[in-house]
Image 1 (cartoon, helix red, strand yellow):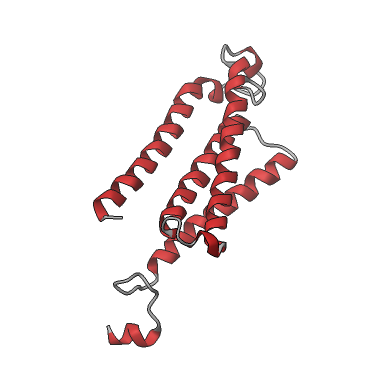
Image 2 (tube, helix red, strand yellow):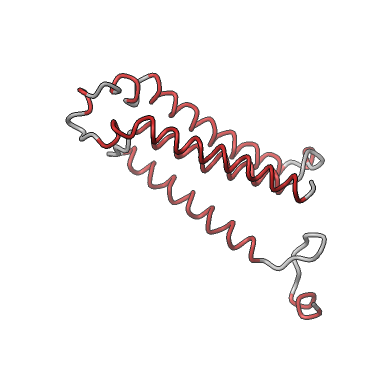
Length: 159
């Protein structure tokens, strides 16, 4: 993929993630800022509560994004049969997009209310997302040759 097309691809994914995050937040800002005891009386309660049409939708779409992102990237990475299907770094970037946007939608689904097993699940998911961000940062720091292969110590010294 050419550099300009790749930049457009990453920008498009980033744009969708930002629009999704901002739109979901703006749509329910008043509801999310309302105290837990007052939420049942809020005009948006029926649609934004976790079992409401919008709130439930956030949970379903967010969960599907996470499942699809993990399944797609893992399958493409581990199955030799699929080695000719697209470039692995593009799958990784799409995986990152799905697995960052999905948890945000799940967060909107929970209406920022955590307790019991849900809290453990949420913080586990948050730890995984943060470790992925750190891992991606470290991965980018690895020196690579012109063809994208990792350089060993001897090659690095020659450079």
